[in-house]
Image (cartoon, rainbow, N blue to C red; front, side, top):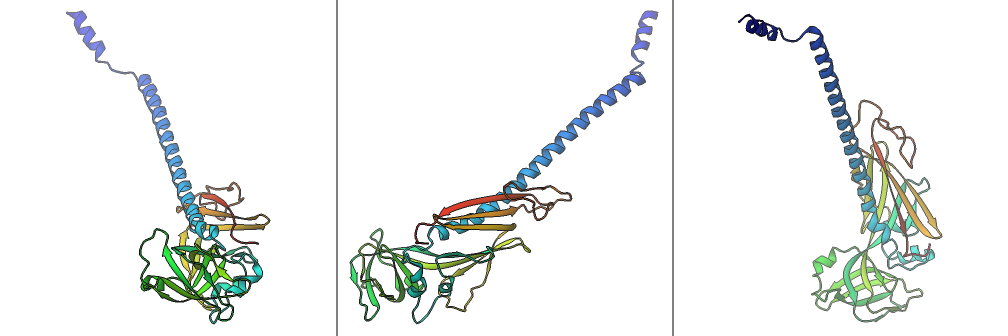
Length: 301
């Protein structure tokens, strides 16, 4: 009986102080490791989110430039001396002063592109043109053989059109959907015929730049504006800190580097250098450099 009581008494004594201290130390070490891992994972998730967001912003700029740059000079006479001449009629478009279908200002900060947008209309019969009147009429069809667009739709086209396959620029003066015929003016020098199956493109102008003080990528879209008329600027992508444009003429290659940042400004420096760029404008943001090179094929530079 005494042995049983002594066993019960010994089992009720519990842990010693040393055992409790050791247990607490081990638990503290485990908790510290868990907190450290959670902090590391949180930092990595934040960094990944920042880099993805910045990369998406830079890629948006590249996508906005892709079609204009690839189609720069499409359907236009491939001679820089003809550029201003082919855009000279009673009205002169604002992009006539740019000099060529692709140009960069002296500071390398603004990009100017004159490009074509496919109307999905083509010339179905050769058209001899008259140097005396500088007028022509084109019989058109759609690429898929569908019905021709109504006059209201063609009326929304830009006034200036190019014919890919004939390298002629036209100033649209009228359209008869019943006859499927487009009327326009042209510059007759060294041009005597509009070829069969030439494709009709609308001419559009793009002016693009980055505002470092606002971290915004802006564009201006030129359609029918005459010289002296400036269309409103459009903020297209936010979080663009800067960019760099390099243009070579032989071969005609243009490279655009876009420095994009994430949307979160941290309470400590998170960027010391950007690979391919150098020091960031604000080290409290994370940055990504997006680069794209195009080969300009539609113009003799």
